[in-house]
Picture (tube, rainbow, N blue to C red):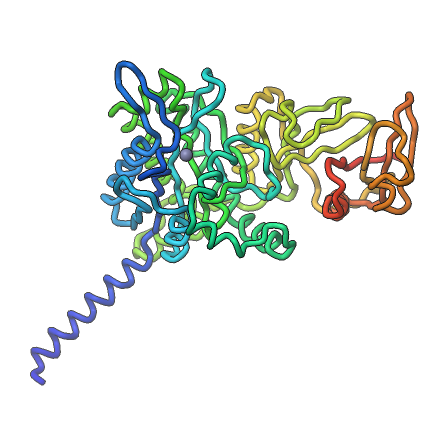
Length: 430
Ligand SMILES: [Zn+2]
């Protein structure tokens, strides 16, 4: 072989190799335009602009976000669909998992039985797998029952097996904080740039998010059945504003991720810019106190305004409802904003020292409040050594004695697994 040829081959190989390395560290994002094909999603016909269908709006916005991202060499964009077609929900998540994406963004439009509902909201996969009563979760998950392919895929997934639940929860909690960060950025842009009304960032159990092995959000860009908002969603101006807000949030998100990992900047051999230092974990856990009330609200009660992942804690006869838990300051702020956006104007963050043992008093689980229980009742048959107290003619039943909040949460989960729902952790001073 000639020396010259060898040099050419060598430089060719080097180019290939460097291209390979460059392409390796691209930030891969899956953009998922909701619905498509025979699945129109939410839709409504207006006398002036005709029919507005969710599947068309989501595709238009998705393609706009994608074309902006594609101009940035740091990103690799994968679309679940670029046309009016319907990939099944498992096709969408399989594609995302197979491509080892760094981020999954699903774009949707909302609809409501209340014609006055409007505004944007972003969903992340919450740690609560028992979410069954919320309308959005139902609507988005209902899609799955239309689809034979999905029935086969998810048929083997046994939601009631404790192992699959634990595995899923562990997996998802890793991505929860990142997803909340992006959700907060998206909603902030809708409010600050586009002057729109944000309903907040919520944690829900959505099929299209649950199976993803990466941070994932589902953005509801507005209500199809709200006349004014629907016109905005169908307009070029509206679609441009929405896609720019989503695009900018993704850019900010990637910056935050890069700061944390110290990643892509060092690889480019550039001096790191003097940016904010990576966020370090706080010493305490923070929960958002939504309200204190003498009334006990069960999960899904309208008084809790659709928020999930709520820890009710009874102290001195008052039920305190706490939302979320985190030891990251940025997530704490997002959780507080979510609570305020949901209507808890006086919500504030409360610090909890992790694994703190009570020096006086203890935690117990209030398993029932009401009339006197019969000895044959499910609760008394299931739990031994239940304590009974009577106050003002009302019977209060409590179970167990532990000394840290973490142990109380664990005990509560054990009781719930036995089929006793809507229990409350109670702090007893003695
Ligand atoms: Zn949808």
